[in-house]
Image (cartoon, rainbow, N blue to C red; front, side, top):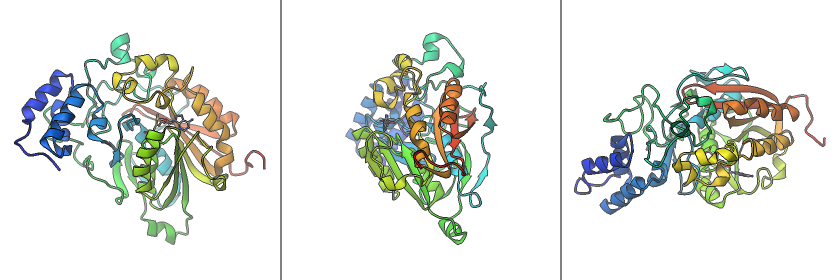
Length: 385
Ligand SMILES: C[S@@+](CC[C@H](N)C(=O)[O-])C[C@H]1O[C@@H](n2cnc3c(N)ncnc32)[C@H](O)[C@@H]1O
């Protein structure tokens, strides 16, 4: 729904957003106008955005892998870079029905990206720069994306092909699903990480494939699990978060797609019957080193909970706990996928290998994303068996 032209004129909204430092003010204005239900709703939304709230919290949704994901205030906003994790997970199972095009390259463990960081927000446009929202690069004068803390890190430049200021496309380049489009039933979509095509469930059942078991730890809004189930089709999804606000939000996104959401610490609330049965274990854990939290843009630092960002001294505290218990929950041949920063890769790899998982690294220059995939060998017994 969008409000009538009798409400706040678009040019006034654009001027206010631009004065507040929103670089892609026209795009944001279009999204706000198309999401607001009434003129007073629109005015309030513009005020909140001008005051520095993340666009996705103002809209109440973020675009992720072509889906519209509900995001409540105080809940981590799914980042475009995390689409790489979904893309990698979707290519793992089941072997025959998934067809993948434009796959990101597999990188050696020490891979360093040379391209500029991706700057598209989860609402499908380049993330705006609020005046109070100075990036670590802006503050420190560094242009090296490798040193950039993430998630919630710097989004300084737009990738080629994304809408620029004044472009009519409010949400996404030609060929992408529109931000408001819920593509849960369409299992061929173009994500930021490439084209993912999954076979229809009927194809899979005729091939005799069993139902995949997917667990999404640290689920936040539930975006990763929801997107994965959308592309895999008929999968059994379990998602966990420790933050009650995230759990409430995830229930809307995940239960709508047939999954279950649990509140608690990592594996603790999961049913014991899942042990040794999980095919895909995703965990976009908090991974910002504690000392770098202060360098995050205010949209993350002020408006996202610390529990979603703080990964401890080197950013890997939660990741180590996830890898430590993963072999107990993974099925033989099942994989754990986590997102890290480039410079965390060597230490993260150690955490995987120490727990008997065979690691590999995938990166995407366009998304400024790094994912570690660790597979439980098929011949290995889980701990305690
Ligand atoms: C970086 S956010 C990722 C959210 C979501 N997966 C995404 O990609 O948009 C990390 C999430 O982990 C949750 N979290 C942090 N520590 C946790 C723990 N010990 N157990 C479960 N969830 C945890 C936070 O509440 C937050 O929602």
